[in-house]
Image (cartoon, rainbow, N blue to C red; front, side, top):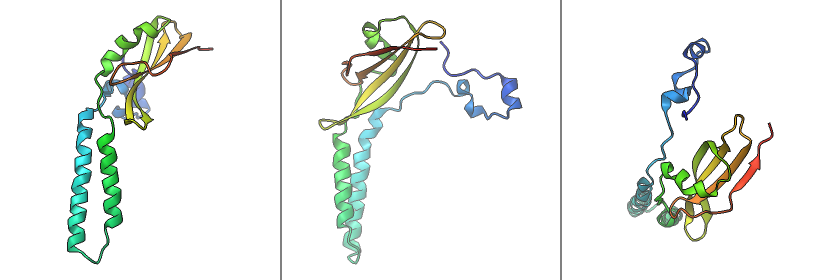
Length: 161
């Protein structure tokens, strides 16, 4: 399986197509490391501290509302679930038992599910197409990116060409 769309170099030059639009030149998409997100609340709290110090030094400006809003944002960032244990290359292994047709090609995306317990839960959303050309079946499966559990029943539909 090839990532992206192969564009004939001669056709690309005739159309004056920029190199960054050729998906093979860029390569596969890699999900950014979610561990970087754990620093966001620290950054916001730093801004809260700077704002508080500025409010002490500049008594003619009232920063109370800004401090409250920034503190709430920092609190929300602390409770967001940023962790996932299942990497993008492990998703297909986890969902093989739930697919009723042979796999031709697939697309995997990291999405987030909003809930009150973790605010945002990372979810691998996968669309799997059958092996025929053109594909006759499409299945959509969502799994929790942290626990690997299935979030809903797999949805399979036939594709009418």
